[in-house]
Image (cartoon, rainbow, N blue to C red; front, side, top):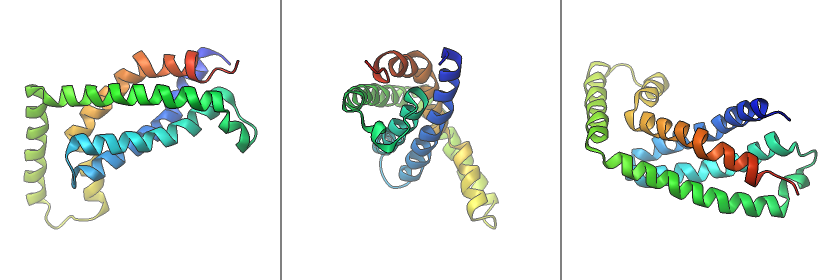
Length: 163
């Protein structure tokens, strides 16, 4: 299979896992520290990622083919390392004063908007907040940079390779 197809396919199915990560992190942001919710979201992404990326790179024909122990071992080791790096990246970037100010301005703006929209509660309000959450946007930028520079090459050339 050619590289551009795998890159796009990996990005698209990875987007499903990332959406799970972002939704989970965003949901838990309301209840726990943002660094903890980020870690929980990465865990959800990991489970989705294994099955979806296996499908892109290996095209398993049966459910049993998803569970090649050598590939699972490489995946587990790589995802632990990559999630630690992504978590550290988020924790470092989250501490930058400019990022904290950016997030705080967004939270202030949401509070101001919420006071105007008291009558508009429900799913559309939650969806609007989801797509305008600045912590989420910071996570997304980190995820995008990480995928292009680190994650795709590791998946393509190290993890999902049958020998």
